[in-house]
Image (tube, rainbow, N blue to C red):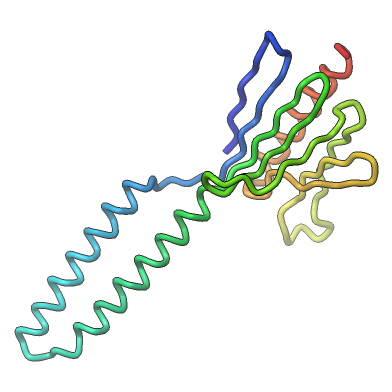
Length: 164
């Protein structure tokens, strides 16, 4: 999912790239609580019937579901911020609140390349290239979104080159 904002005073454009996550954190908690309650109700019913061995497996199921949802939520906090200004191109990758890396390029020399997989087995790659360096962006996007982002970034870079 890509969101775009423009700052007309500074002449910059900001693109926020995030994975498309349809379930919010609150939704995950509600889902986890509902599944936990239902699983425990079934386990209690089996315990009352004398099948006590169901309880450890029910607790293991709840534990695996909780860990899986936690890891999924943590991975969905990933984002890339691409800021294109007349004098610089800044890419910031984050995982949650923590900034992982910052990359800075001169916008005049940046080339946007969309590399499709030759056999069409894997997703395409959107690369920003400058002075022998290459950086992949938008890895969490679909091929169509990646293609749209490539066109939009190319247009924004061309407008920066014309004004600079």
